[in-house]
Length: 125
Image 1: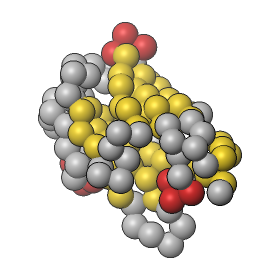
Image 2 (image 1 turned 30 degrees about the horizontal axis):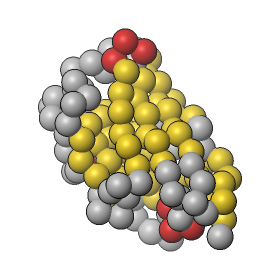
Image 3 (image 1 turned 180 degrees about the horizontal axis):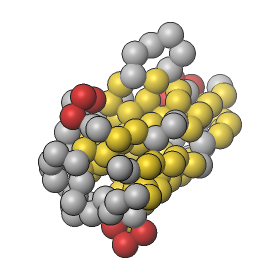
Image 4 (image 1 turned 180 degrees about the vertical axis):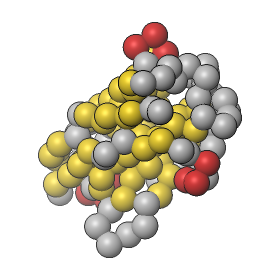
């Protein structure tokens, strides 16, 4: 079993930055693809970003491309989401997720077996 714990969320003004972290315990993440998803109030959860097992290949939703950066430190069993130029529409609960079935990134939610509890990001205008 893998336990994922996100941190780093909070309240920020539009144009600001936040860095989310997701630390794993229970098993090493070094062979797993990882991803970030988010869910805004009244909306379905949506894909944000994904990264392959080595951390040298990433993929982003169009809505965050150029503003968010997904990275990982396998030695620390941790993945990160650097969020810059935040907009009010980025307000959501952000979840990290682990895909043990593939080393390559995926945008498909049901391919991720392990999920964190989520961290709230609120961007004020």
